[in-house]
Image (cartoon, rainbow, N blue to C red):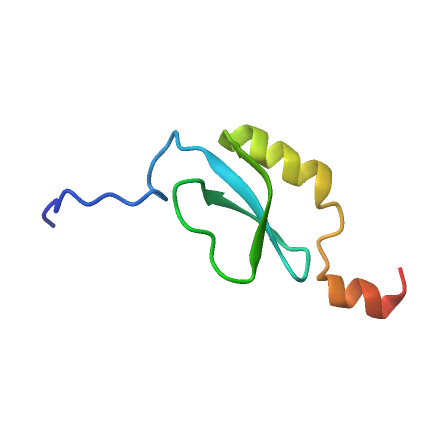
Length: 74
């Protein structure tokens, strides 16, 4: 495999991230320099990896999709 000189922001070990959330309240870390995909909204950052993970741990306490939470009435 040859190195083309192109690197992916997903391979960078020290980037800054943003935490993004979709309509189902699912959270994800996203590299800050990369455009956020449609259907996702930034809710935290840009910050380091550990700070973003800590935010997700504090904020996303019920991992069920929002539609399931709403349907169950809890």
